[in-house]
Image 1 (spheres, rainbow, N blue to C red):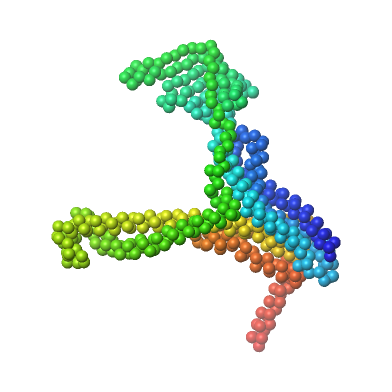
Image 2: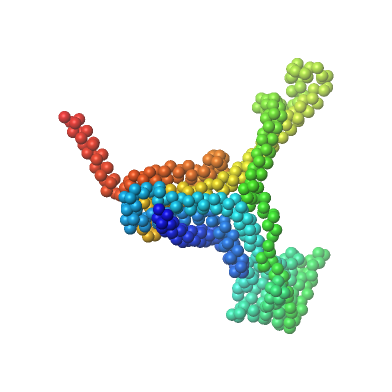
Length: 491
């Protein structure tokens, strides 16, 4: 049996490694493609792109592992079935559960690794990934001056060149508008030609202008528009310097992103969840015990529909006269009724406004708490999917008995898309407060676990799940049963 376990495990590990690498690569490319407009044209070096790929990989490893388990288990059992090795093993009295045992031990170890990776590695990867993407987003596009077009990428300047050579350093018919002072087109420089070069390690652009003229309007508020003075001088050579520091990638402090729930490990999430739960409960208790009783008592008083006079402060004396024989007002002098009613109404409105603010804050705290709960449950749900997919893929492979990559890949992708749909819908319903996070995030497990049990039971009983002839036989039996009932009824 040890040799058999080793054989099955070797047959599983090869497809698992290959399918994991392919699945991870596809998921990373799909993830980065959503940000291609942000990344393209920034002149990022190979080291930055490599870091971006690695950080995104850490973010998606937990998602690629279940897909790799599903594909490799399907391929392993499918190859055994296609070569009739599975039939020989079953005829020897070895059940499908015993055949899956070495793969199960491997997946249990994978489950423990996934938990550790999800608890501690993924938050660090998310922190580095999203801080790097933020820095890339703040980086300006690379300096790309196109002939015949104005370029406004340099703050305070607008550049145009009619022509440029193949190297991009030699320009002809250059025009530069200076907007540094923010007063419009009051300064313009024209030149027949120019030569560009980057200095100070690429932080400064030096432009040497030849044979040109510089115009500048003199700002004089007393002069009429048609009489505004201006200066103009011609030059054979003029040197311009442009600050290019904004075009380089500047790394920000990663600690600014650490309070986000996706950047926290399991210990930090647990601590924050306890604090948020305590805060929400304290707000609820304060509202129920202190504010709600006062709000209920004053609600009828400040309701404009029940007492229209309260909508107009000028009507308060009339209201005081109307209620002069009611309550404690009769114990006060007549000249105090208006003041007492005014203060009472103002206090009532203040209590209601404060209660509305408290309810809004409770709702915000509940939304924040829900986000942290979603992240908390996700850290457990995705690793557990590896075990669920094992008991879907291995029995399906034993039933389909198709070797190679084609059929296992098609079936695996279909199940993974179904799993992805359930996960996205569960997360969406949890965020919308339609389902509790423990119900929404675990929705794929609730749905796939019975399916995995049913498929495993079918494989244990050698059920022809994908054999069309077996379904045809069952259909013929149903039709013959109905024909027999019709004949007996006719007699």
